Length: 449
Image (cartoon, rainbow, N blue to C red):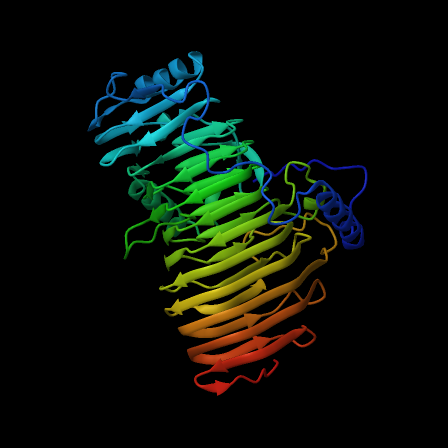
């Protein structure tokens, strides 16, 4: 699988990155856009503007909600018509409207009414191959069911459902994987449910993402995004590969709150580029200023996962969340082939009621490729876990790639939990501070590996 990176005249070492980080912080403070300060309104009404009241129902546009008729052409024509008229909202009424890939236009919003289902076709021919962002680079691959590029102030909301009809796509992957264990995620093209790129002031609220063939909601190079009161679901008892809930790829100022995750991969995933030249990839700016609040986690690979493809991730706050399934809380994937800088990552006021580990910080070696280069250095620093209560499976592990990863500034405080495995495995040399931590009704003492 060929991966093309853009190279600057020279690379950056971590000292250069620290200097750039300090300069960007100074500029943000000077301009009033420091972490936690929202630069533009995030919660405006759907369709706000001169054409806020213009609505077009899928049924009025000739689409048929019988779950059998393919409506791609009718729905795309409705989107194009609204765009030509200056904008408006495409309404999906009660019924099941089957469709292939749709492409929203600037000023055109989407609302799914109660009982309304926009259901993805299971025929890959209804998702014509195109150049798209996927797993930290660009390649020819399937578009999503819903696509939006350069759609500032986009609104997708309502009480209805985006249904990816995922079962045939999952089966196709497992069939190939069992025939050839070298199969990667991208060897079997599967459509995402929604891909939104290069957009500001986006709001997604109320709807359900169901049975995606691949990732559910992929945000790329977006700013000032709110995802609120959204459900991400796959069926229990079924392996549904790569069904990430929300992928935040090279974005800044994103808030995820009041959402529920039952997926078969990472719930919220912070992504960027990958490989030994990743720091020179100008298509992948840092992931910064992320707020993950008041969510419920029932199944998935991580409450907030950093990686697997990611370079710089900073200023992330996960707070007031409830974990009820086997979902790791702090999940940092450390790629031995990618220079990474993870800093200022904070978890606070988390309730756990499940079987997973609190910490899953370790090397991630799946599919990595050094391309003949010297193994790069990475840094993880200033990670705090403040306020965890409940019962869980294990304390987990904090370890880096020997000779490559510097881990420091881990703080554990105000934790009171019942754990089946109370041991926390921490490599020698990692700076960990423990304050007011109780495990199984006893003061916790860190025993290093």
